[in-house]
Length: 364
Image (cartoon, rainbow, N blue to C red; front, side):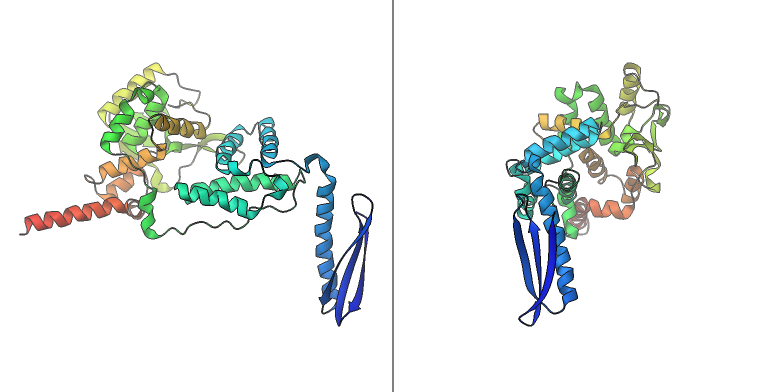
């Protein structure tokens, strides 16, 4: 961009004048006055010039000047798939479903208010704040790519998004555990039971309280059919390079050996006989855990339920709490007693109410 800057004193202060040629070759000017010193005016002029240079580059980039958000994300997703970033592409597509209202807007015209509007809609839907933040991270990355390398925009419209404050009593709203009746219905339904791999995944989650990565990381040597126990000593996770493989567990408490029902062991024994393993001797030879998560959610959706695999871990705990103390439950699920009591505080309150009723009945 061809330009020059001049400074002059005007009305008791300093003024800068930037003369420049626009994209059509015509000379134009931008000026501002009222600065106390020439050095302050120079700093302001440099900032304005940087902004003008960016806008000049963007205006000159006619190829993407009038591209809509939907058109740009098609390019972005195409790049991911070309780079074999299939997992990132799939999770991004899933997140973008919450930003459909942006599709027909020119990407250069999208403002912070548009993004916050999408976030507000997700909040009204009842999505977890952590989930919303994950989706916002995806969208922020897309706009960063629009800045560099595509140079479609100069500023990322995803600013300081406002999220609802979560108080200490809100943890019970996050928990979506199934009742025993609901669990039996799900596991016995043909849409689940006939999908062998997904059924066994859900069976282990609801009968042992394992996390997704822990289930995906189970190998057949972790299953002791004689003692009816399952040893959790690793998980299947993505490393820093984006590749999946065995990794360490979430914390030292996560390393554990837990009892399993005889019925679950019988089903696992039958599954082992029928389903081939992989070179790692894994029970579930799934390359990416996200695929497992998506399929399980679809199984629930096919039954008209809005649940996830992790909800089966919550189900395991809530069904045990009336019969087992918190310390033992913490050991079974690989967490601390404090976390268990906080996350499942709603169940703890029910127990206190039951205790109150019992006291009134016993000590008349």
